[in-house]
Image (tube, rainbow, N blue to C red; front, side, top):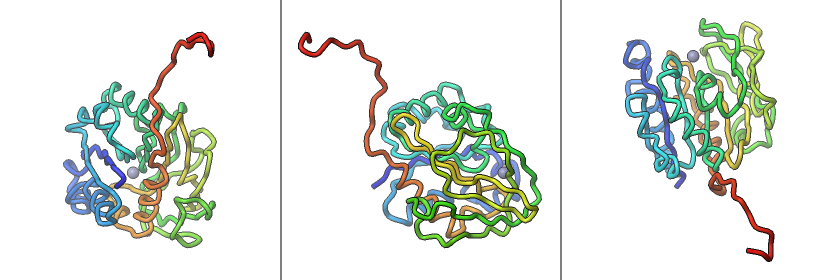
Length: 237
Ligand code: ZN
């Protein structure tokens, strides 16, 4: 079993009936549901209310952490973000979802502003598979479409992706690098753009395929504790 932790701030769901109508169990509940149905994943969920439960111990028992946040990024304590960043450097997988591009852990891991352009009018998006041999793209066609999502547009201020798996075209003509892979230290990171809270994106079969593939891809092969030892010359230990 791959041990997955899903963090969702769960704030829109409490404030906006349009969001709780789409996600009555929260975005984290929807993600947990399709991951658990797969049978390969054990899933824990965390929201902003208990974000401090992302302790070093919980992160050590997490193979892959998914992160959905938007209006409450600033309420995540810096110390929690630092723990997540260190866990990734030691090998934990990290998947930043949609507006998680501005989350503290993702920005810390990228080292750039992660700013982008956006408009919220529910355009159709066509997600193109630009790296069909990549593990995250398995089981998909040449592209898939989502009838409505928030538009995210270039320029997206991220480091050059180590692998670009998806690129999105929107009805309005914008382009966006929507599926980006990185490694930092021993950890693997994936950013995936679809997932605006007012649209049922996480019920889409292709999106679920992407995220299940991404969790499998990001699961660690090793955990390497951060260390900076003072060493002795071989033969003089
Ligand atoms: Zn959004």
